[in-house]
Image: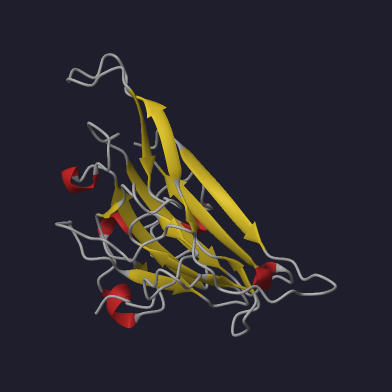
Length: 220
């Protein structure tokens, strides 16, 4: 089953480098002041989670567009630890926040509007992300056997030729899609932005130094 622990108009890649310090302070797991428990009405897929933890970083990911979030969906626990297995929490939660202008030539009622999409909402009252796919984990045999067609590597502008056609790029890939178009999650907006995000998380233990780094590629 799916891991429970866990067009090309724009793209971003993010490298999360967690470096050792001379003195490490243990960070208590504290919630954001208004972060509630997970709310889900009618959605395409139930909230699913994955964890990038093949190297020394522990980062929980869900299919709502949140990153380094607690993989059990706890409202009071964080999801980004380094080194994994220790109480050293560096990230409580994070994720995408997007704003843009709908093209005036879009041909529908809200063409020309400026609108935002909070896939990660620290306030806790205006989260707009909804899962379009589960989170697929390349280390889970069931996920690997049922890897979605959209999750295969095809973009030669980002990936080396030797990787084209593969399911995974790294020692552990997580892949998922989310959007902000579910009308149940407008959260004060009169209409959604209408944006789909595709995320691939990657991690390696080599070469030296990569054991403390995670990589993320987003297509919007």
